[in-house]
Amino acid sequence: MARSGGGMEGSGGLKKGPWTQAEDKLLRDHVRRHGEGNWNAVRRETRLQRCGKSCRLRWANHLRPNLRKCPFSPEEERQILLLHGLIGNKWARISKHLSGRTDNEIKNYWNTRFKRRQRAGLPPYPPDVERQIKLLRAQNVNPFADADADAAHANASAGLPAPPLLYDVGNPFALLSSIPSLSQTASHSHSPLINQNYPLLNQMQVFHHLGGSQQPSFHQDGSAAAFGDIVSSRLPPLPTARTQAELHSNQFDTSISGGLVDQSMLIGDEHLLRPNPSMVKVSSMPALSYREPDGSRMLPAHGAGSDGDVSSLGQCPPGQDLHRGATWDFTFAAVKPAKRRTASEVGFSDMFAVAPPGDWFGGGSTAPSPGPSSAVTDEEFNLEMQQFMSMLPLSDEHGWNA
DNA sequence: AAATGATTCAACCGCCATGTT
DNA sequence: CAACATGGCGGTTGAATCATT
Image (tube, rainbow, N blue to C red; front, side):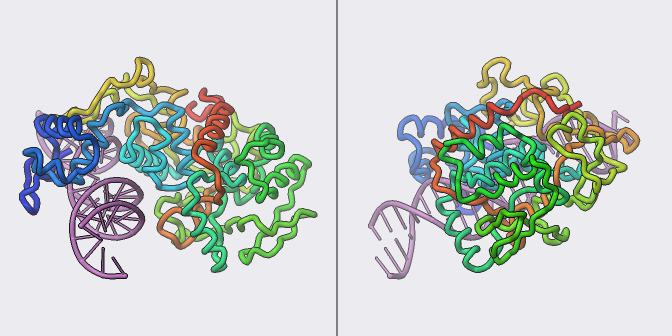
């Protein structure tokens, strides 16, 4: 998209703005001959008046083979959510797990949908995704934690709270405990991702299944916190309610609804979410059901390019791209306005029932913090992720899009 | 039909890490 | 070891487009 009117020259006579077909051809030919990399040589060896960075970006985001330009599939959306929940705004890392997707694409996707949900006063993750995130984090699953582990350790050493788990302020165990299969996984799996350093959450699940309602206390100093006969000495402290000012920019201000949602919204998910007496009713919330108008997004809204955009369309197999609909957009599109609505049309019956993110990624930091770390490899993580994915229905089982 | 506001996403920018000299 | 070059990443911007009034 043009951001400078096209053809504008920056410093050094370098061109900015949208790429033309001719430029694309030059770049493509160059890469074909010389391979990727050495981007600054492109300008030297071709007539392209683009800086190396611009070339790299153009190639990576639009020209390289195997790019998939179709809308995200439900699995991809779920992966994005899960990965984002685990590692935060690490778009490049996330994109590595989504074949044919660029970090920019994922970033745009997230930002767009996130803002939409934010406006609607919704948490970033649907309930079951949030549960997955909780579980993975509780199990210390962070395949990218090599570098992050140091930071986390440094934080711990400095007495700073570890990245919090997502949880329900009112009932931190309601979500975690409600998935027997997951509890089973946590308790009995021999997966390499099951980290025994975090047994407490698993026990919490058991505890809750046994009818426990007492909530544990966690101490920021990491000292043991009594929880029945369960003592936590290693679990990162769960967050306390924070003020809006402390929320990360990416966090939702759940104060709109007190961080909780109407109990009626739990319909369809009631076997997973326990009624919470502290839930409040939200009087005005956009209706969330949405159906894309007849695959209109098959084509870019703009850009198949007035200026020779060569966005590779149709690279997704038939049926993979026309995915709009109730069972497809289970995540963000549920908040997407079918049409912009008047306040009177707005409803809340399809709001996600989910715990407030509360302290989403650690207070004070402008960047989301990764979750607890482990030495799990990407391969192991992928395997584990696939297993989790397979456990989750792609259908609209819980009626989020109803 | 025009005006206005909202949304999308390609492209840019600045910073940082790594490699090379 | 320092200086420089290069590549990568995440955040942000803004024109094009869409939807609504």
